[in-house]
Length: 280
Image (cartoon, rainbow, N blue to C red; front, top):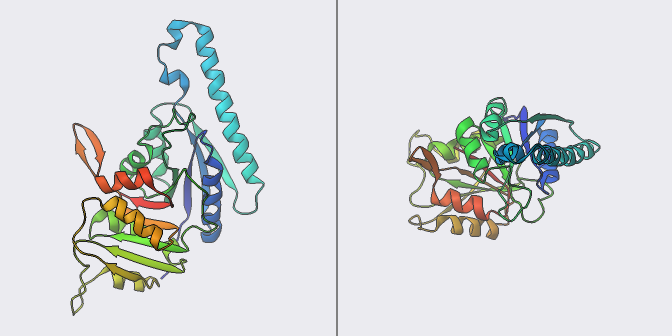
């Protein structure tokens, strides 16, 4: 039973890694026969400095000029990527705020989002909220493939995949979203802490059976109680297994009208070294 991807949505911004996002999206789309839309969504400098008009018309004009230059630079990167072989990518953009909500609205119509990890040291990321990736996932309910800002991407994303499993809605959604990639993987590992998946005799459903029904034969790694620093340990195991894709749920909770990331999700999003496919 083969799963499929039909529409990818890539986030574009002035990040130096935007070309890698386009390349990853094209690679996945070509393998699965999917369409790709690249959406430029960045908070304009004019919006970020709301008092600029009070300073003078020259400042407002300069800010708009900066926005136009940033957009043109990204558009040039996009057009250069179009010269590469493979699936063509459609360009789209939003020029309003809040960019997270606008991007999430477009995400409703995609099977998978391709986003970038927040780079706190980047001088070009001010127009993208630090919590953009997780906020888009929560607002849209759509899964996202998040690419790290450090290092180079693997030649093929998902040749060796690691699933961080716990019997939760978030983890189950992430696995369903990742199934097209898992079916093409050469190796799939499942990491479990703090209890095992249901494997009792009889006909109870379990993850191993679900994966096998989809043609995925995974290697299971069962550990003891869930450690407090699970995020760091999870990333360490991903490195040990030489994986190039991590599949996991994105966890969090509401507090004071805001959505707050759980500790493991926060650690992974902050310190990832390989692409991570998440779902909330």
